[in-house]
Image (cartoon, rainbow, N blue to C red):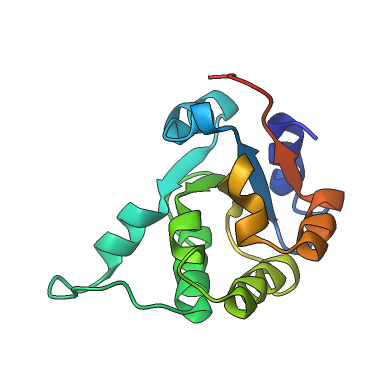
Length: 155
């Protein structure tokens, strides 16, 4: 599946109950997510910036846990401003801090229990690191209907 097909699926409110997807990005394209989102005509949110802006100023550390990651993604998906689909970068930074069971909880919730939000979300992950952030079984589930992989430079 291409990134264009993934955007079309995530935008289609009648296709998936939970409008969530994953876009695997080659190493050379990491850090260029805003350009990619502009080309795909969707919004882009840097999860690191979002988390930093949502924490109290005196906070020294980002709280760990699947519940926090899901809450921040819900905030993005429910944002009143912006279009119907948003590319979310740097989620891998938070997922890498979680234990495997908590990461799997995040993926399960995004796939099965993340319905009816205002905006569909597409999470970018480094293509080479996906096996560290998602089990093979979970990858198989997501690849069936909601995962795309970029091929080479497209931005």
